Image (cartoon, rainbow, N blue to C red; front, side, top):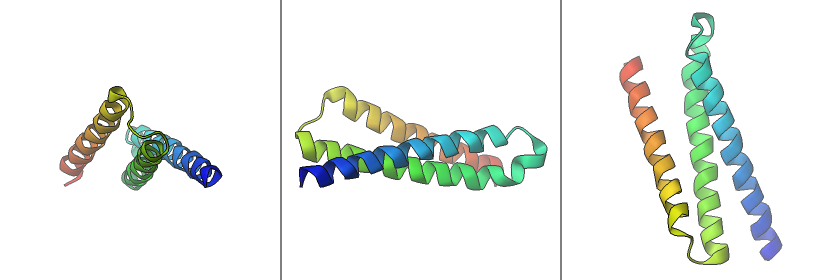
Length: 95
């Protein structure tokens, strides 16, 4: 049971990290005109993957150790706020 939880935690960390990487690559592609056609799908995929991994990690850590530190919750919700702001900015830019 504990080993399964650790494996799930590692997978969620990997998903969150890869999502952040894809998100960063997508944002980087917004600059060159020749690559812009790939930017929005990469940003959307990065947001989705990072958000999924981040949320799974947060839930698994809370299940494993009970109450989290106050700053862990703050970082989690700050990241969600940033992702939401990015999604809104992209929506208005490309509509």
